[in-house]
Amino acid sequence: MTWSSTRLAVSTAAVALALAACSGTATSPGPGSASSPADRSAPSATPSTATSSAAPQAPPVAITVRPRASNDISPVTPIVVTASEGRLRSVAVTDDAGHHVPGDFAQDHHRWTSHGDLDFGTDYRVRTVGLNGDGRTSRDATTVSTLSPRSTAYAQVVPAPEIVGDQVGIGLPIGVQFTKPVTDRKAALEQLHVTSTPAQPGAWRWIDDQHVHYRPKHFWKPGTTIHLRADVFGTDLGGGVYGAADNEATYHVHDAWVARANGATKTLTVYHQGHRVRSLPISLGKPDMPTHSGIHVISSKQQKVVMDSCTYGVCSGPKAYKLTEYWALRISNSGEYVHENPESVAEQGSRNVSHGCINLSPANAKWFYRHFGIGDVVEVSHSGGKALPVWDVYGDWSLSWGQYRQGA
Image 1: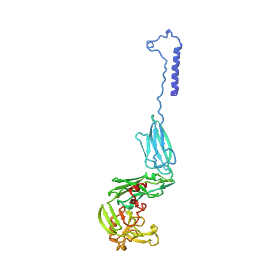
Image 2: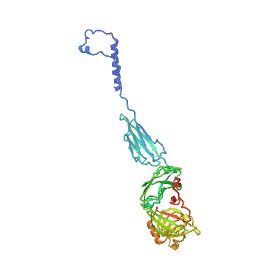
Image 3: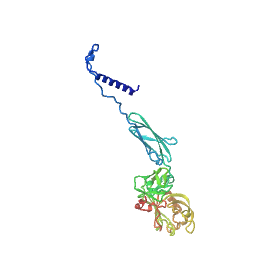
Image 4: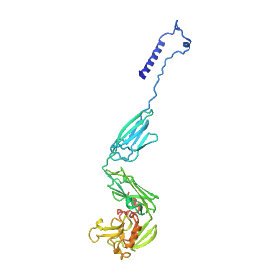
């Protein structure tokens, strides 16, 4: 007999006894039915109207998984499992290959959150066990699928740390080159972060749809550490293009080295930490091929380089050239260098005869090469040339601070 049928039988018997007691008239006990002292002392029976009831059961635990099952979830969106009317006992998230996604429980075990990025185009099985207030378990299983992008783009840091080395000059703009055009520039910039120690104001500027630069308001302070972080993985860059991976770089700024080339005096005056250390005779670009004016930044250096005007579109005619030069430091992508030129030594200090470069004697070129490097500053004045275009490698300083900030 079950608990419920036993309870029903007992209850039925009690009702029957109560009805029997109420149906007869009260009479004195007859012979053989005299009550004992115990019978006389016992209270008379009273029908009971109370019934026993079981304690209420706790509701089952409710488990929720976010984001909901879909196939367009960003891989940077965390998977969050929550429990109401109870707590989580276990959560297991695995991909198609059975690899587990790490995550952490909240202290009260009402929430579990994955950490770390997911992968593109992957199904994740979320299996959960919850406990309600009575300790009863509830199980849940669902699938979360990340999006499969039409195309992805990498964010290459510029300049690459492995190229520039551990130390850079005070004039170096830094930036990111995307391997695909970016149409949602705002979304991209929200994922780019620059930290300078000590802190200095700076701003981003788009050079074109694949290149974005960052420069400080003033030259970097010597001794500054610059950290660039591009957290673009999973970011919608527009046009169906998503960030393929994060990237980062750290740069350290060395002493301030600045060279000022004056086309009127034909001299290159060198300053270290703000103090004049040397003045060198030079020859700038001749009148029909003037050196760009304004602030230039050294972008590379080579002990020997072939300079070919065809690399920037001049392949024939009187302005075409192809020469091998030494102790060369590039200051623009339009073919301008500071380098040795033994053939113009007689004109150095008196006439501007180069194709746009800053010519030095062999001895002075070697000295300059030893002391200057990537990120150091070369300022050109009185050259007769136009300002260096902002898009020409590091022409960022051709714009005022107000103009530069408007390019974000």
